[in-house]
Length: 399
View (cartoon, one colour):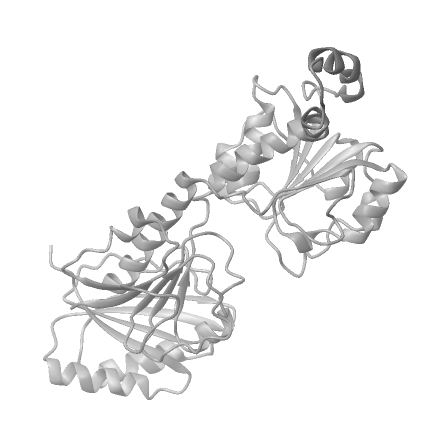
């Protein structure tokens, strides 16, 4: 079987090259075409784009998926993948640069030097450099809110001998693998308030959810150590922008460094804004493309799901001749209705897995060999079950 894939021009060619030419027909564009099985993008906005009925998967070669209409996709049975952690090192390194910028007025010093004129620049520099005295990070406390792919690396790096900071971390949803990889030097706080109270620097690394929206607001800023610096490399909406500016103006905060620009933040003397470049490194773009292409291929060829933002991980060894995959609503007795149909055809289920996430669920059923016409009748029966959105029949990949 050959799969039709449309790829965006901005996706790394190193990732696109992983699509095997004998299995995938590639075309370059910004939107899916009729008959496409997959769409691979970076920043293309799909919210106003109709998704064709044949589309099986969308891959986002990056982390954020706010450019993808997730509800529309899942309603049509389209599995959306991203690349969590692929750009984590690039973001981590920018956060370290931001910490240094928060400690020393490098940007202001550079701007001042570039405006000097005359033949006695060295004299002017020596006379004026006292205006750009900063502090050091050694021995200061860094509060890390969110200890995922990026936050965990920032916490480990800051607590190392290279930086020598005292690190306090908070993450009520920390994953087991992440926890194992954290340095024993990191103190784990029980509340956000504990992090804010004594930290000289606070850096945010949380996803945007209903719980985290404007989590750093006027009330919480008032708890922060006077003269502290706030870094935001998570999402723009996790902070109350007006509260940040008010805290900077009254001196509660000494500085704010962020990767998210807005009209209110620009030109404020205590704000440093980057143009959303946390993951903008060649390595990160390559890693993101490779990761998402591998997950797309795995889904198309085996039905296995990993790193989807719309469905839970569902991975099962493909050891039978055939596999049925069903995307359906997460309502009672769905699996029973599926297996009842298979029982009516006197079929043996070799293996089976069902996973749910919110209102939707995903089921994989492995079967022994079934004649093609009979298999098609079974797939049609399954499609007719109420609340079933999509049924696929996948043959075991040839080794």
